[in-house]
Amino acid sequence: MEQFAQDGQDIKIIEKLVTKVQDMLTPGEKIDYIAVQKKPAVTILPDSITISNKRIFMCEFTKLGLATDFEIFGWQDIKDIAFKEEIFGSKVTVIPFTGENLSIDYIPKVQARKLYQYIKAALENYKKAELAAEKEKIVIAPSSPREVVVEKIENNLPTPVAVPAPVITPPAPVVQPAASAPVVPPTAPIPTPVAPIAEEEDDEITLKLKKLKTLFDRQLITQEEYEQKKKEVLSSL
Image (tube, rainbow, N blue to C red; front, side, top):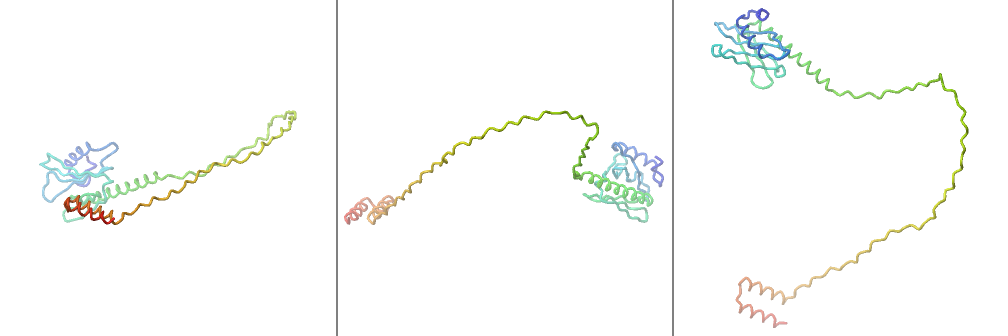
C-alpha cells in the first residue's frame, strides 16, 4: 500500500480503495496511481480517482462509507483530462466522448499533476495501439509472381541410342462429298389483311325511336304518349 501513499494520501483510505478496486480488475490489469481528495475541513471518506493500465475509477463514498459509487471509464471512452489549480488543491475533470464531464475537487496539487501525467500518457499509448491495429488491417497487395529459373543439366547426359527411322505411309485421298442444293427454309404465309367492318350509323328515325324508348323507360312519358309518338315517327317512313 505504501507505493500509493507517497504523495500525502491517507493510507487507510488507500487500503479501502485498493481492496474494492482489486475485485474489479480484469486479467492483466493493475493499479498505477491513486489520487485522494483532501478538503480544508476534516473528511472521513473523501472522493478519489484510481488509475489502472486500462481504466479510470472515479470513487465516491456514500452513506457514511456503507456504499460506494463508481464511475468507470475505459481509455477508449475518454476524450481528454483537465485540471485547474486552486487555493486549496486542484479540480480534476475527466472529459468523456459521450455524457457529462465528471470532476473531483480538492485533489492535492502534487497528486493532480501526477494524475494528469498518467492519464495523458495512457491516452497517448491507447491512440498508438489503435493506429497500429488499423495498420495491421490494411491488406498488402501480393507482389508479382517469382520468376522460375530452370537450370539445364549439361553433365551426365544419357548415352544416345540408335532408333530406326519410322515408316511413313502416304495419307489416303480425301473424297469430297457432292455438293447438294442449298436448303431453303419455308417461308411463313403472309396473312391476308382483313378489312375492318364498318359500323352503320343509325338513321334519324332510329335515333328518334331510341330516344322515345329511353324517355319511356325513365317514366318521363306515359305509355299512351310513347305509342302515339312512335306511330308518328313510323308514319314518316
